[in-house]
Image 1 (cartoon, rainbow, N blue to C red):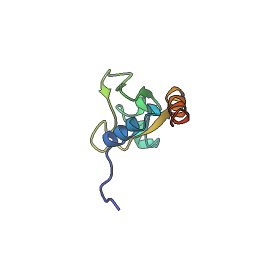
Image 2: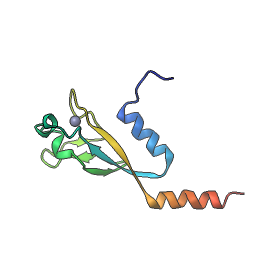
Image 3: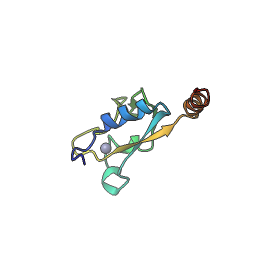
Length: 96
Ligand SMILES: [Zn+2]
């Protein structure tokens, strides 16, 4: 069992390698503390393409993934791309 927790950067890399994930969603801890966070709260629920950064709606700052600052508790969730999924599906069907 691995004791090392994957960083958000490594997680995004894994998602890309799967070939069916086209995007990512920024999720905050969604609690009273993060609602006062000027960096993270505006990013809550924002979506970006897997290869593109999140652009902060207030500051214009770009973030590929959390953490956005020291003590940031945000994480990403993957967004499936149905075009990529059906491409893989056809690849499987057309295999010998
Ligand atoms: Zn955060």
